[in-house]
Image (cartoon, rainbow, N blue to C red):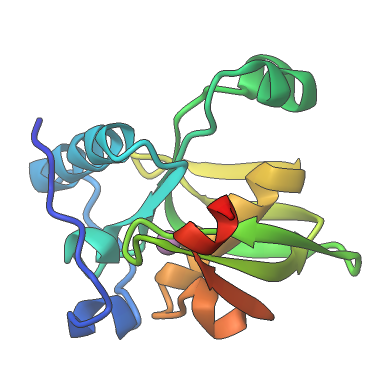
Length: 170
Ligand code: NI
């Protein structure tokens, strides 16, 4: 396993539409997933998409902190590492909620973004088996942010307001 470099928007890969994964037997895929999980943990983030480590493939990893707040909301699922390949939003609530987001590719910024409150994601696990994840709240938000990365969309494109980290401390 290895920590991968997280690229910034100056790198055009972050703005490309990522390719679907078809070869689940490729050992490079499993290495990439392990590296993404490790990179996410090291960066103390909650989600990472493969284009953020300069790989234009439809792979995301999502992991909320296993703290009291997420345990209250998600129970035993709180600190689970979600790996979703070729994720798609199969269903989304009409109800939109506003919340604060940041991105490991754009350090030092925050923004408020409207997202669907509840979504169902379909995709494949790391071995290609079909999976469905139904979720809401913060976890649903993180999934929507990461799936956007696969289409070259950054949260700042959707944000109603953007501010710098130092402004938040004031
Ligand atoms: Ni991001």
